[in-house]
Amino acid sequence: MARWGRWTALGAAAALLATGCGGASGGSGDGKGSTADAHAPTGSSATPGAAVALPSSLTRQKLDWGRCKNTADSAAPDGDWQCATMKTPLDWSRPDGDTIGIALVRARSRASGGDRAGSLLFNFGGPGGSGVSTLPAFGSVFSSLREHYDLVSWDPRSVGASEGVRCRSDKDIQAAESLDYTPDTPAEEQAFFQDATDFGKGCAKAAGTLLAHASTTDSARDMDLMREVLGDRKMHYFGISYGTELGGVYAHLFPKNVGRVVLDAVVDPSADAVGHARNQARGFQRALDDYLESTGEDPKKGSQEIADLLDRLDARPLPTSGGRKLTQTLALTGIVVPLYSEQSWPRLTTALAAAKDGDGTELLALADGYNDRDSSGHYGTSAHSQRVISCLDDRQRPTAEATKKRLAEFEKISPVFGDFLGWDTAGWCHDWPVAGQYDTPEVSAAGSAPILLVGNTGDPATPYEGARRMADELGKGVGVLLTWKGEGHGAYTSGNACVGSTVNAYLLKGTVPKDGKVCS
Image: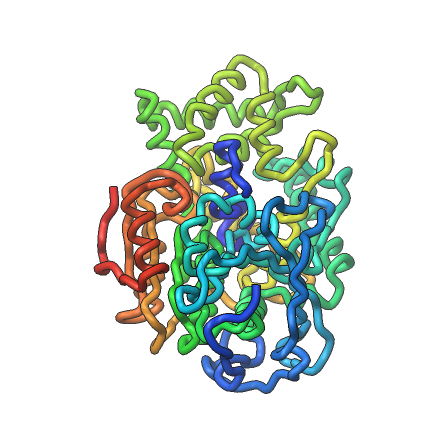
């Protein structure tokens, strides 16, 4: 998964998957922006506001909005959604060089004249999530925002219809399910790291030159070109999960272009790759404890029973109705999925009970949904894109030796998730073909308009503490924190009335809430 662990996932899309439900349902903005204070060379140390001239073929391009088309991994959205492709530099340090196409989707605002505020861009996380397929699925959730905005999302570079990367075949993906991702023997450890090497080679072959130009910084620059091409003077943006990191990087690079920006399920920008894994171990264990308490079970005892179940699966995977085996790693993924949404906790109860009775079918179904595997055995590519982006971002490459020394710490934090997340720090970007760019992203945004941060006290994937740290790093007077005392990953899509009305008032009316406001 993302640079802070395999389970950060796709923000609101993870909640949609967990609950097993879904909904579905152009033109000029509020004045042309300027490239004079926008585009600097790629890199974490790029100076905010450094000017780089872009060719008019990019800044003045006209988007050809039309009917959306089916892709290999998703059907075209229904209703009044339109799609287009924007050209952007492959290498932002060479703006006159080769270009790539960025796929966009939009639903036009229902407002007219002065009531229209421009475009509201969405990123649902990952990294690696397709905005082209996700935003239409949440059209009903964000419907009220169409009173003032065109709702717009996109597939970031290396994702989906934007030069999407497939690093290995469906057959090879399924074969990798038999690997032990918490290796116990030298042979299992060798296979674990060899698989990481092979995956990286597959990505390098599939992505080519794009492998070195698919970072979060690259995407932030794409966003600002998108703002200009859409005709918006300011960037209005809604980022969820990893989308909050992308939003923070954007605000650092283009603070004067920030309009109304909401960051929900906030990533901790002060944590490196290992720190994010620690945070996530705490977050998922906290969510599991809350779930177990809700069932009347002692969290410590219940966690140990689940850990014992996983140990048994390590030695002997469970049978399922479809003939495949439920491995330890697939079971762990199946347990993680319902923790993204409190509505899905009953399904976790059913799946765990079946597994304890010797049937792994329910947990496997949950894992398959998360891994984007359909009934024919075809896998989506979001996890491939996620690794391409996160391993270009991450400079850290923890060794096996250093990881082994940390395992006891991870297991103490979480007896259920710690071992896996500890090993994941070593395997995720092992032997990656290109070097990473930074240890932690730069998100300081002096001079930016206020940015609304929404933190959820029960968020497993991006724990609540990260929202306060993002506020601190954005800078005094920029980050405004809204706290929701709830469960699950993300707050706005939960349906909480207090969160919804506060965010809507900010986006639709410009009403900035008091820093520290609490919803329950």
